[in-house]
Length: 67
Ligand SMILES: [Zn+2]
Image (tube, rainbow, N blue to C red):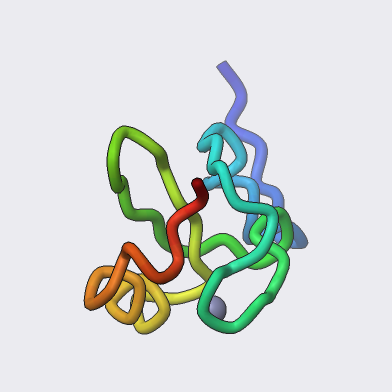
């Protein structure tokens, strides 16, 4: 099997992860483009642009979680 290196797409490695939010709830960046980290809350996977935003979410998930 040939290993193909794709240099121009940093989101490749996260593409198989389904998140429930279109936007990072902390900074409102698009998760489709900027997904770097995820957190599971009440059986839903939320995506974030950075570990920082994930930590903010985890401090007060009720505030940010979808209904
Ligand atoms: Zn963010």
